[in-house]
Image (tube, rainbow, N blue to C red; front, side):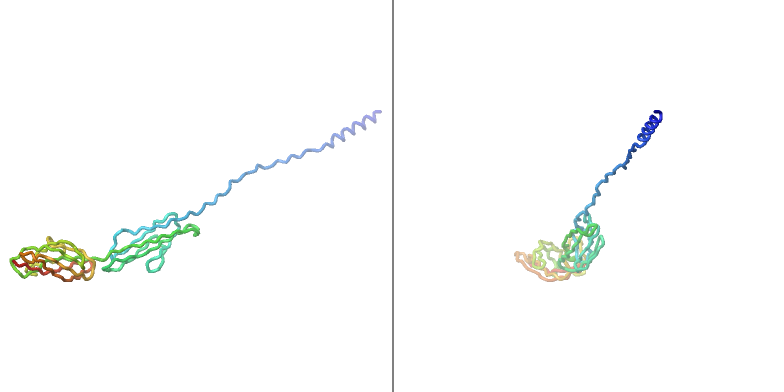
Amino acid sequence: MNNVIKIAAMAVLIIGGCKKEKTVIVKEPVTIKEPVTVKEDGVPTADFTTGKSDYKGGETLVLKNSSLKAASVRWTLPDGTTAKTDSVSWVTDTAGYEQTFQFKLEAISQNGTKSDYIVKNVKVNPTTGNVTFYSYTSSPGIPATVTGTLSIDGKLYGEVTLPRVENTANAPTGCNQAGYPTLSLAIGYHSFDFKFVSNSGGNISTNSGSVYVSSNACSVEAIYTYYFN
């Protein structure tokens, strides 16, 4: 009987020792990454300044880039050449006529896929010089001045008063002298007509001639007038 009990007890121990162990799997925490944002390359806006609004022939044009969102620029100059600098200059010709020069600026984005351009025409005024007029007369005793209407190249300039000079040694030696009208004209030859009262009866006479104006220089021109009582 005791042997039977012992066998039964051993069986219970064997069965109890055969229980399966549970396996616990520990997972690492999952990190959720933020989506990557790709910055879009901005579209540039092309523009440039021309330095000043009033140029004369013989001066140098200075143009500067003022584009927005541009990583690089490309200029196209009036002669077709190109430049990639931030500013450019252009020497104009000395001329007695108006000139116009065309400039193009292209603004390019960082990755080179986007661009914008602008074209501007820069006007250049004629190169000028000065001329002073006076009245020459060989008749003594006439009024010290003569007033009349002056036309240049067929266009009315206006009414001017000319001091009369009987001896060329007393003529003005330069421009902007007190009492002598000084005009600023484009360089080159210009015709003139001066209409004035030539006698006490009110008759109108005209004296015509031409004058050459040099660049940034002064010319002195005599207009012959007379007066009869």
